[in-house]
Length: 340
Image (cartoon, rainbow, N blue to C red; front, side, top):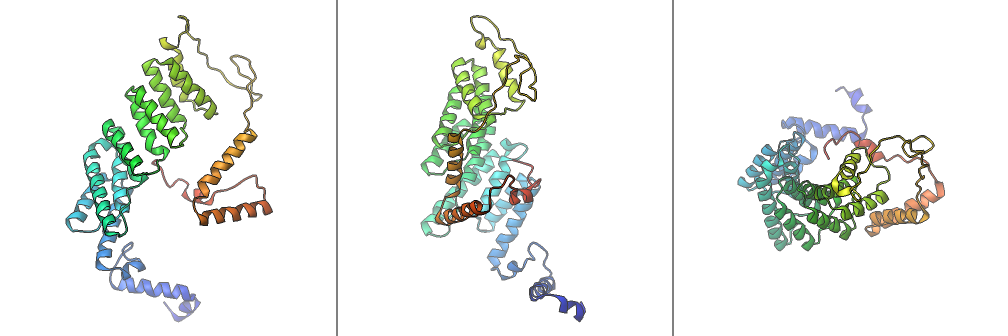
């Protein structure tokens, strides 16, 4: 590069260029060739290399290779961070045939817990066995129909006071529904309510589906009432489970079958089958206040976030209101994640 070109560079750009020259001088390639890599200890460099290998396996959805890399790390005595455990177990749960990796994933999970206990005793930075790991394990065991393991995992996370998310229980609910186990579906549903988790449409469909399989009208209509209250715009796929129920013998009233018709709704909200005017659903004042309170609860988790949220509300009160809000983070991640 000539002197004229160098003179046009800012001080920051010249500093970055010197680092890149130093990297290329020792023959390193990205991502190992990043500037921070040069200042790592030999052990940290090895960990970084293995981490890059596992990340590549995740990008290629290669659970088998990720497990091999994990075994190499153990055989070489390389420290395995929480991030590595999380990636490997999640990769196994999302594999094309997760059942094939269940035994090895369970082994990794148990080893992770043992390491976590050992590290906690030394008061070093712990290997966290948190909600993402339990969610991945329950999803994997649900797919494998290992319900005993699922129940044990739920009991374990509750004892450890790990806060669950809906993604933890949904696969289990789907699996119990497919197996026709109404009692356990109700058990999962009660867990959702206990942990203040709101079922989504697929969860309600799973509950309705198991009622169809067992012919339980009392539970079907109870879940249907909740479904109607919570899901205001059902998808077309939900229509199948409703047709199955009202076509079933259990749905008959005094031996009389239901007549099932399909129609349309006009722009004015009139049903073509019954000619009834459909009611426009609007958020009541109570529901609006409840929604705002829920948002506040999700955001205000610590003193720093409370301060940030209060500042944002003051700014919004001063410059708002706005009809359209664009979430920059979601725009940036648009079309970047195609699997769950």
